[in-house]
Amino acid sequence: MTDIEFITLLERITARTASRQDIAEYNTFCDQFRYEKMDLPDMVHIKGVMSRHINQQIDSKPVVRRFQPFRIAAAASVLLVLGASLSYYLYTRQHADKAPVQMSKIEQIRPGRNSATLTLANGKVIQLNEAKTGVIISDSKLTYNDQSDVGSSRVADPLLLSAGPQRIATPRGGTYQITLADGTKVWLNAASSLTYSNGLDRDKERHVRLEGEAYFEVAKDKKRPFIVSTNTHEVQVLGTHFNVNSYPDEPLQKTTLLEGSVKIVTKYQSNILQPGSQAAVNAELISVSKVNTELAIAWKNKQFLFERENIRAIMRMISRWYDVEVVFQGPVTTDTFSGGISRFNDLTKVLKSLESAEGVHFRIKNRKIYVTK
Image (cartoon, rainbow, N blue to C red):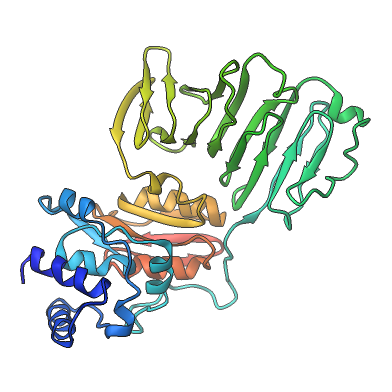
């Protein structure tokens, strides 16, 4: 069966027009490559076979390891763009014959959670409620997204009215959503911080500083630009949606634009991004490319989502979210991995899914993940 024939077969299956003979041909094809069988009721759960992505991928033949959600794509040598429901569904169909991740019987490592601290201008630190989904910050009052007060946060509180920068920070294994005084919404990823003025709604320029990773939905204000500063560059906007990844342990700091327009500025260069583009900054030099924006904001959507990603990059994400140390032992695989799974699974389930690609193995001990080829 050719790639085109296999794609056509998948389209019939996902459209619920496949015959029993089509299903039999699919299972025969999968048997030849040791892929998992699915009967007709299972197959109708498959979603998101997008022809434009298939056409882009069909001529290239990279060395890519597909873990569970992308097994069908591996058989056809094309990339299937899958929805979050498919990622969850297929991850529940783990193979019993796979070698399990080695770990202590008592060592269950849970995923990250809502967790953040707010440092006020006078130095007072407030531990934000982990049971809340986010915090709304103004120069006169602090409330959670459900309108309940954050501690003693009344208008007359001098701690809130004092001039100076405020800082909200998430630990490793933490995330939090913030609404700033101007109405801008920010989602902080793990091990990240955002520093801002408590007069952001009045400042001539809305200036914030980011360490780590955050997704921004900037409130529109044509007269007052919104500027995000990182260690390597600035992102200048009027009102738009974008993601900034500025972790210091990443080889490139990346800004991905989903909506609107932003200007990326370094000491030596500047560049204007269009929706669907990503700017990668290295040594203050800017490189712009078209990308799948869903990859950049997967963390905000509570997913791990990889497309031809190397194992070191994947393990950096896992390390930050599960607050674990990663140790590579021996040669590191040069294969890349594609697939997706919920970030709210236990660590063991995530690692088992990666192992299903048969290119890497894991052992967990004392909150350390040992990675072997």
